[in-house]
Amino acid sequence: MQVNKTNGKTFIEGTLIQVLIKNERDAVDVIGFCGEHEAIGVLLYLKNLPEDFFDLNSGQLGTIIQKFVTYYLKVALVLSPEFVKSRFKKFAAESNRGNHFRTFYNRVDAVEWLAKN
Image (cartoon, rainbow, N blue to C red; front, side, top):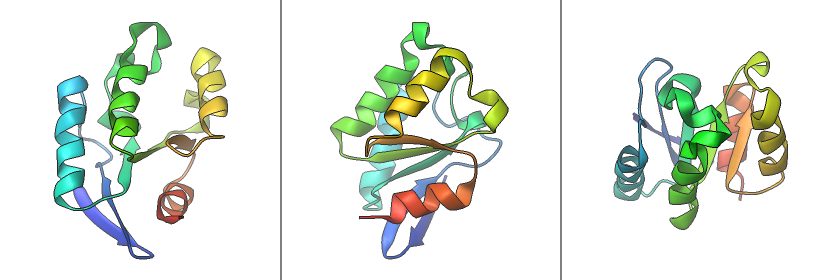
């Protein structure tokens, strides 16, 4: 994880290749790291999350995202367009209307959203 700052807003960013969150406990650890650095949220990539995160039947997505929402932290997830499909695509479209969890196809847009008021 690395700490980044844009427009006076601090956020935590996962690396492109490291599994960062495998379960609910790992999410709590990331939240703690955010608190230590007074971050407003996290920028995650596909490899930072468990494989079953995107299977809505597993419950991982809801459990993990709810942890961040509880602590008023934003979650920006950068994915390739071909990865967003089926039920996850519907969920992503709905969540992109809110202010807690959004999916993006590039880092620039994700950082811009995280740094917004």
